[in-house]
Image 1 (cartoon, rainbow, N blue to C red):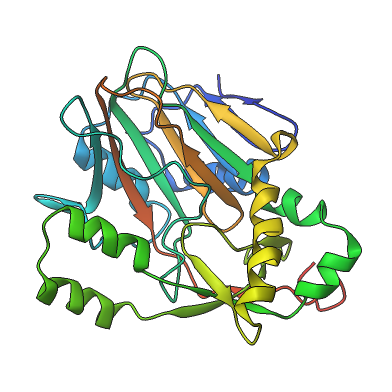
Image 2: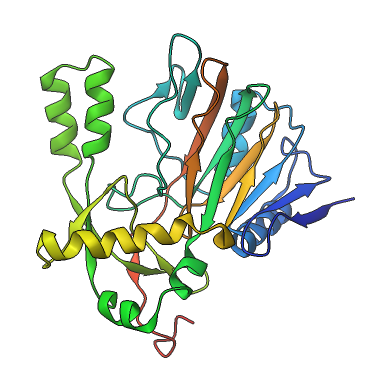
Length: 283
């Protein structure tokens, strides 16, 4: 029997009664609908090898290859590993994934291969609720504006991994700065979502940095409100599938030196479109 149990009123639901190794198109469509409703959905006790993980993700679209950490033999898979010799990477920031791409991802599916006995939770925030929680003055201030997103934080990751200047230069050429609407419309529902994050957003188009910085800090702070969040405690063989178009997430780096090994597969998305109000036909 399939059941859906919400984690909080704002975001997140745990789905039971489905084996992700064996779903048909109808079930995939149902999962996608629940994803859009709840922003992130979770599954427990899923025995997925890497091929099955990738096959499940392909049910929802073409897959990205992450430029920094592709898994050998499976370029669609990004391995996130930490242990006593490899501290957690700098993931402890509220962010949406790959907003430095012209077409950021639809969403990601994260699978837990090994988890610490305690700690290493992932928190998620509903950025549609975060937008709705803004005061009218701030909404008017950001209406129609675009933010600048950059690859720069991953440049630091490449340097830490030992990449030479030639390789880094190739990435910088391939991934120049991009502009995305501060408030994007969800492509499936038309609902507005706050689409800036403290990891990849570097400024606001046409606004001096001394004005943009405090405004962005106010917008970033929306993700930190518990009323818009859920927190997922991982167990081995758990799965999280989040809608990257309407959420941010934060991986708690509180478990060092314990081992945490996760594999992420990411589904390609589309160019974000600006939200233009309830009367534009999107809502």
